[in-house]
Image (cartoon, rainbow, N blue to C red; front, top):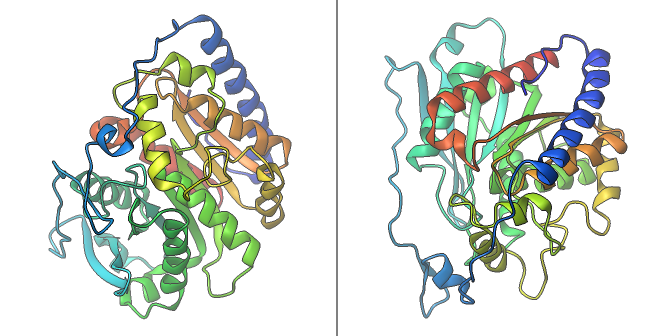
Length: 356
Protein backbone atom coordinates (compact mmCIF):
# COMPACT_ATOMS: atom_id res chain seq x y z
CA UNK A 1 0.00 0.00 0.00
CA UNK A 2 1.77 3.16 -1.12
CA UNK A 3 1.96 6.32 0.91
CA UNK A 4 -0.33 9.02 -0.40
CA UNK A 5 1.33 12.10 -1.86
CA UNK A 6 0.27 15.07 0.28
CA UNK A 7 0.82 18.74 -0.22
CA UNK A 8 -1.22 20.21 2.59
CA UNK A 9 -1.21 19.52 6.34
CA UNK A 10 -4.97 19.27 6.82
CA UNK A 11 -5.37 17.01 3.83
CA UNK A 12 -2.51 14.81 5.05
CA UNK A 13 -4.03 14.60 8.52
CA UNK A 14 -7.50 13.60 7.30
CA UNK A 15 -6.16 11.04 4.87
CA UNK A 16 -3.77 9.57 7.43
CA UNK A 17 -6.70 8.91 9.77
CA UNK A 18 -8.57 7.02 7.07
CA UNK A 19 -5.43 5.23 5.93
CA UNK A 20 -4.44 4.14 9.43
CA UNK A 21 -7.93 2.76 9.98
CA UNK A 22 -7.87 0.92 6.66
CA UNK A 23 -4.44 -0.62 7.13
CA UNK A 24 -5.39 -1.73 10.63
CA UNK A 25 -8.43 -3.56 9.31
CA UNK A 26 -6.37 -5.03 6.49
CA UNK A 27 -3.70 -6.50 8.72
CA UNK A 28 -6.18 -7.73 11.30
CA UNK A 29 -8.05 -9.53 8.55
CA UNK A 30 -4.80 -10.84 7.14
CA UNK A 31 -3.78 -12.12 10.56
CA UNK A 32 -7.05 -13.93 11.01
CA UNK A 33 -7.63 -15.44 7.60
CA UNK A 34 -4.75 -15.48 5.19
CA UNK A 35 -1.74 -17.05 6.87
CA UNK A 36 -1.43 -20.34 8.74
CA UNK A 37 -0.40 -20.58 12.38
CA UNK A 38 3.29 -21.35 12.94
CA UNK A 39 4.46 -23.76 15.62
CA UNK A 40 7.27 -22.27 17.70
CA UNK A 41 10.51 -24.17 17.96
CA UNK A 42 12.04 -24.41 21.46
CA UNK A 43 14.33 -21.50 22.32
CA UNK A 44 17.75 -21.85 23.89
CA UNK A 45 17.25 -20.74 27.50
CA UNK A 46 20.68 -19.11 27.45
CA UNK A 47 20.24 -15.83 25.50
CA UNK A 48 23.99 -15.61 24.84
CA UNK A 49 23.96 -18.99 23.11
CA UNK A 50 20.73 -18.15 21.31
CA UNK A 51 22.42 -15.09 19.79
CA UNK A 52 25.82 -16.76 19.29
CA UNK A 53 27.51 -14.41 21.76
CA UNK A 54 30.51 -15.30 23.92
CA UNK A 55 30.31 -13.84 27.42
CA UNK A 56 33.73 -12.73 28.68
CA UNK A 57 34.81 -12.67 32.31
CA UNK A 58 34.91 -8.86 32.40
CA UNK A 59 31.23 -8.63 31.39
CA UNK A 60 31.83 -7.77 27.75
CA UNK A 61 30.77 -10.04 24.93
CA UNK A 62 32.52 -11.30 21.83
CA UNK A 63 30.43 -11.11 18.69
CA UNK A 64 31.67 -13.76 16.21
CA UNK A 65 31.13 -13.39 12.48
CA UNK A 66 31.03 -9.60 12.59
CA UNK A 67 29.58 -8.16 9.37
CA UNK A 68 31.87 -5.93 7.27
CA UNK A 69 32.35 -2.22 7.89
CA UNK A 70 32.90 0.58 5.41
CA UNK A 71 34.98 3.73 5.92
CA UNK A 72 33.64 7.23 5.28
CA UNK A 73 34.48 8.75 1.92
CA UNK A 74 35.17 12.40 1.17
CA UNK A 75 35.93 11.74 -2.51
CA UNK A 76 34.51 14.81 -4.33
CA UNK A 77 33.60 12.67 -7.33
CA UNK A 78 31.00 10.76 -5.27
CA UNK A 79 27.36 11.79 -5.21
CA UNK A 80 27.46 11.83 -1.42
CA UNK A 81 30.38 12.81 0.80
CA UNK A 82 30.78 11.36 4.29
CA UNK A 83 33.00 11.82 7.33
CA UNK A 84 33.17 10.65 10.94
CA UNK A 85 33.03 13.07 13.87
CA UNK A 86 33.51 12.26 17.56
CA UNK A 87 30.62 12.92 19.95
CA UNK A 88 31.89 11.60 23.29
CA UNK A 89 35.31 9.96 23.36
CA UNK A 90 34.84 8.58 26.87
CA UNK A 91 31.77 6.64 25.72
CA UNK A 92 33.12 5.81 22.28
CA UNK A 93 30.19 7.50 20.55
CA UNK A 94 30.53 9.26 17.23
CA UNK A 95 28.56 10.16 14.12
CA UNK A 96 28.96 9.59 10.41
CA UNK A 97 27.70 12.60 8.48
CA UNK A 98 26.47 12.24 4.90
CA UNK A 99 26.25 15.27 2.63
CA UNK A 100 24.84 15.23 -0.91
CA UNK A 101 27.59 16.69 -3.07
CA UNK A 102 25.14 19.05 -4.77
CA UNK A 103 24.23 20.57 -1.38
CA UNK A 104 27.39 22.66 -1.54
CA UNK A 105 25.82 24.54 -4.45
CA UNK A 106 22.32 24.82 -2.93
CA UNK A 107 21.01 28.25 -2.12
CA UNK A 108 18.77 26.82 0.58
CA UNK A 109 19.72 24.57 3.47
CA UNK A 110 18.75 20.91 3.61
CA UNK A 111 16.61 18.89 6.02
CA UNK A 112 18.49 16.84 8.59
CA UNK A 113 17.75 13.16 9.19
CA UNK A 114 19.30 11.82 12.40
CA UNK A 115 19.53 8.06 11.87
CA UNK A 116 19.88 5.25 14.41
CA UNK A 117 20.86 1.85 13.04
CA UNK A 118 19.24 -1.49 13.81
CA UNK A 119 20.70 -4.65 15.29
CA UNK A 120 18.56 -5.45 18.31
CA UNK A 121 20.57 -2.98 20.45
CA UNK A 122 23.31 -5.65 20.50
CA UNK A 123 24.80 -5.88 17.02
CA UNK A 124 26.18 -3.73 14.20
CA UNK A 125 27.43 -0.17 13.96
CA UNK A 126 27.02 3.09 12.13
CA UNK A 127 30.07 1.91 10.14
CA UNK A 128 28.46 -1.40 9.13
CA UNK A 129 28.44 -1.61 5.35
CA UNK A 130 24.69 -2.24 5.15
CA UNK A 131 23.96 0.99 7.05
CA UNK A 132 26.70 2.98 5.36
CA UNK A 133 25.23 2.17 1.96
CA UNK A 134 21.68 2.75 3.20
CA UNK A 135 22.50 6.22 4.56
CA UNK A 136 24.65 7.12 1.53
CA UNK A 137 21.77 6.35 -0.84
CA UNK A 138 19.16 7.92 1.42
CA UNK A 139 21.07 11.22 1.56
CA UNK A 140 21.21 11.23 -2.22
CA UNK A 141 17.60 10.21 -2.91
CA UNK A 142 15.92 12.19 -0.14
CA UNK A 143 18.20 15.21 -0.68
CA UNK A 144 18.97 15.59 3.00
CA UNK A 145 21.95 15.68 5.31
CA UNK A 146 22.05 12.41 7.26
CA UNK A 147 23.76 11.97 10.62
CA UNK A 148 24.13 8.29 11.51
CA UNK A 149 24.80 7.90 15.25
CA UNK A 150 27.12 5.32 16.79
CA UNK A 151 25.59 4.47 20.16
CA UNK A 152 26.69 2.04 22.88
CA UNK A 153 25.51 -1.53 22.58
CA UNK A 154 23.95 -3.97 25.03
CA UNK A 155 24.49 -6.14 26.99
CA UNK A 156 27.61 -4.19 28.03
CA UNK A 157 25.45 -1.06 28.08
CA UNK A 158 21.81 -1.93 28.64
CA UNK A 159 18.98 0.47 27.93
CA UNK A 160 18.61 3.36 28.49
CA UNK A 161 22.27 3.84 27.45
CA UNK A 162 21.33 4.03 23.75
CA UNK A 163 18.65 6.63 24.51
CA UNK A 164 21.15 8.65 26.55
CA UNK A 165 23.55 8.55 23.62
CA UNK A 166 20.83 9.59 21.19
CA UNK A 167 19.87 12.65 23.21
CA UNK A 168 23.54 13.57 23.69
CA UNK A 169 24.02 13.25 19.93
CA UNK A 170 21.18 15.73 19.32
CA UNK A 171 22.75 18.20 21.73
CA UNK A 172 26.11 17.72 20.03
CA UNK A 173 24.55 18.34 16.61
CA UNK A 174 22.98 21.62 17.74
CA UNK A 175 26.28 22.84 19.22
CA UNK A 176 28.53 21.54 16.45
CA UNK A 177 30.77 23.97 14.61
CA UNK A 178 31.34 21.48 11.79
CA UNK A 179 31.02 23.29 8.47
CA UNK A 180 28.53 20.85 6.96
CA UNK A 181 26.21 20.93 9.95
CA UNK A 182 26.56 24.62 10.75
CA UNK A 183 26.19 25.99 7.25
CA UNK A 184 24.18 23.48 5.24
CA UNK A 185 21.51 22.15 7.65
CA UNK A 186 18.08 23.68 8.25
CA UNK A 187 17.70 23.22 12.01
CA UNK A 188 13.98 23.89 11.85
CA UNK A 189 13.57 20.81 9.65
CA UNK A 190 14.97 17.90 11.66
CA UNK A 191 13.70 14.30 11.71
CA UNK A 192 14.63 11.46 14.05
CA UNK A 193 14.75 8.19 12.16
CA UNK A 194 15.68 4.61 12.88
CA UNK A 195 15.19 1.12 11.53
CA UNK A 196 14.28 -1.82 13.79
CA UNK A 197 16.01 -1.20 17.15
CA UNK A 198 16.98 2.20 15.76
CA UNK A 199 13.27 2.95 15.30
CA UNK A 200 12.78 2.15 18.97
CA UNK A 201 15.64 4.53 19.83
CA UNK A 202 14.20 7.31 17.66
CA UNK A 203 10.82 6.86 19.38
CA UNK A 204 12.08 6.75 22.97
CA UNK A 205 14.69 9.46 22.47
CA UNK A 206 11.98 11.54 20.84
CA UNK A 207 9.76 11.14 23.90
CA UNK A 208 12.64 12.22 26.13
CA UNK A 209 13.24 15.31 24.02
CA UNK A 210 9.53 16.11 23.99
CA UNK A 211 9.33 15.86 27.79
CA UNK A 212 12.44 17.92 28.43
CA UNK A 213 11.74 20.86 26.09
CA UNK A 214 15.51 21.31 25.85
CA UNK A 215 16.58 24.37 23.85
CA UNK A 216 19.95 22.66 23.30
CA UNK A 217 18.19 20.22 20.97
CA UNK A 218 17.45 21.05 17.31
CA UNK A 219 13.80 21.72 16.50
CA UNK A 220 12.28 18.32 15.75
CA UNK A 221 9.65 18.23 13.04
CA UNK A 222 8.89 14.51 13.06
CA UNK A 223 9.78 10.88 13.64
CA UNK A 224 10.42 8.27 10.94
CA UNK A 225 10.07 4.75 12.38
CA UNK A 226 11.06 2.00 9.94
CA UNK A 227 9.86 -1.40 11.18
CA UNK A 228 10.33 -0.24 14.80
CA UNK A 229 11.45 -2.91 17.26
CA UNK A 230 8.85 -3.28 20.03
CA UNK A 231 7.58 -6.24 21.97
CA UNK A 232 5.48 -7.24 24.98
CA UNK A 233 4.67 -10.18 27.19
CA UNK A 234 1.46 -10.94 25.29
CA UNK A 235 2.02 -12.44 21.84
CA UNK A 236 0.31 -10.75 18.92
CA UNK A 237 -1.23 -12.59 16.00
CA UNK A 238 1.67 -11.79 13.69
CA UNK A 239 4.22 -12.93 16.30
CA UNK A 240 2.47 -16.28 16.67
CA UNK A 241 1.96 -16.67 12.95
CA UNK A 242 5.59 -15.82 12.12
CA UNK A 243 7.23 -17.35 15.20
CA UNK A 244 9.88 -19.11 13.10
CA UNK A 245 10.40 -16.34 10.55
CA UNK A 246 14.13 -16.60 9.67
CA UNK A 247 14.91 -12.88 9.80
CA UNK A 248 13.44 -12.22 13.27
CA UNK A 249 12.00 -15.30 14.95
CA UNK A 250 10.57 -15.14 18.45
CA UNK A 251 13.57 -16.87 20.03
CA UNK A 252 15.96 -14.21 18.74
CA UNK A 253 13.49 -11.43 19.51
CA UNK A 254 13.12 -12.50 23.14
CA UNK A 255 16.85 -13.07 23.61
CA UNK A 256 17.72 -9.58 22.36
CA UNK A 257 15.24 -8.02 24.73
CA UNK A 258 16.52 -10.12 27.64
CA UNK A 259 20.04 -8.79 27.10
CA UNK A 260 19.13 -5.17 26.35
CA UNK A 261 16.42 -4.28 28.88
CA UNK A 262 17.38 -3.29 32.44
CA UNK A 263 17.98 -6.36 34.59
CA UNK A 264 14.84 -7.65 36.26
CA UNK A 265 12.15 -6.09 34.05
CA UNK A 266 9.92 -7.85 31.53
CA UNK A 267 8.91 -6.99 27.97
CA UNK A 268 6.04 -4.78 29.13
CA UNK A 269 8.60 -2.22 30.29
CA UNK A 270 8.12 1.21 28.72
CA UNK A 271 11.30 0.86 26.67
CA UNK A 272 9.90 -2.23 24.99
CA UNK A 273 6.11 -1.91 24.90
CA UNK A 274 4.87 1.58 23.97
CA UNK A 275 1.24 0.65 24.66
CA UNK A 276 1.71 -0.70 28.21
CA UNK A 277 1.39 1.27 31.44
CA UNK A 278 1.70 5.00 30.87
CA UNK A 279 2.78 4.51 27.26
CA UNK A 280 -0.50 5.85 25.92
CA UNK A 281 -0.24 9.00 28.01
CA UNK A 282 3.31 9.64 26.78
CA UNK A 283 1.93 10.13 23.27
CA UNK A 284 0.37 13.37 24.50
CA UNK A 285 3.87 14.83 24.45
CA UNK A 286 4.18 14.23 20.71
CA UNK A 287 0.69 15.58 20.07
CA UNK A 288 1.40 18.73 22.09
CA UNK A 289 4.51 19.54 20.04
CA UNK A 290 2.72 18.89 16.74
CA UNK A 291 5.28 16.41 15.46
CA UNK A 292 4.42 14.25 12.49
CA UNK A 293 5.18 10.53 12.65
CA UNK A 294 5.78 8.11 9.79
CA UNK A 295 5.61 4.40 10.65
CA UNK A 296 6.53 1.83 7.98
CA UNK A 297 6.28 -1.94 8.10
CA UNK A 298 5.36 -5.05 6.16
CA UNK A 299 3.09 -8.07 6.47
CA UNK A 300 5.96 -10.55 6.68
CA UNK A 301 7.46 -8.95 9.80
CA UNK A 302 6.49 -10.65 13.10
CA UNK A 303 6.32 -7.17 14.64
CA UNK A 304 3.78 -5.79 12.16
CA UNK A 305 0.76 -6.10 14.44
CA UNK A 306 2.51 -4.01 17.08
CA UNK A 307 3.46 -1.38 14.51
CA UNK A 308 -0.09 -1.18 13.15
CA UNK A 309 -1.47 -0.96 16.68
CA UNK A 310 0.92 1.90 17.46
CA UNK A 311 -0.33 3.80 14.41
CA UNK A 312 -3.93 3.26 15.52
CA UNK A 313 -3.15 4.35 19.08
CA UNK A 314 -1.40 7.49 17.86
CA UNK A 315 -4.40 8.29 15.71
CA UNK A 316 -6.73 7.88 18.69
CA UNK A 317 -4.51 10.21 20.73
CA UNK A 318 -4.58 12.88 18.05
CA UNK A 319 -0.97 12.45 16.95
CA UNK A 320 -0.35 13.36 13.33
CA UNK A 321 0.68 9.94 12.07
CA UNK A 322 1.00 8.33 8.65
CA UNK A 323 1.30 4.57 8.23
CA UNK A 324 2.90 2.91 5.22
CA UNK A 325 2.59 -0.88 5.20
CA UNK A 326 3.20 -3.37 2.39
CA UNK A 327 2.12 -7.00 2.08
CA UNK A 328 4.73 -9.75 2.32
CA UNK A 329 8.45 -8.87 2.62
CA UNK A 330 10.36 -9.34 5.89
CA UNK A 331 12.00 -7.52 8.78
CA UNK A 332 15.02 -5.52 7.60
CA UNK A 333 14.29 -5.97 3.90
CA UNK A 334 15.49 -2.43 3.11
CA UNK A 335 18.97 -3.37 4.36
CA UNK A 336 19.44 -6.23 1.90
CA UNK A 337 17.32 -5.38 -1.15
CA UNK A 338 18.33 -2.09 -2.82
CA UNK A 339 15.10 -1.81 -4.82
CA UNK A 340 13.04 -2.00 -1.63
CA UNK A 341 15.29 0.61 -0.06
CA UNK A 342 14.77 2.82 -3.12
CA UNK A 343 11.01 2.66 -2.62
CA UNK A 344 11.44 3.53 1.06
CA UNK A 345 13.55 6.58 0.18
CA UNK A 346 10.67 7.76 -1.99
CA UNK A 347 8.23 7.33 0.88
CA UNK A 348 10.52 9.28 3.22
CA UNK A 349 11.09 12.06 0.70
CA UNK A 350 7.33 12.43 0.12
CA UNK A 351 6.75 12.58 3.87
CA UNK A 352 9.41 15.23 4.47
CA UNK A 353 8.45 17.28 1.41
CA UNK A 354 4.78 17.33 2.43
CA UNK A 355 5.72 19.09 5.66
CA UNK A 356 7.60 21.90 3.97
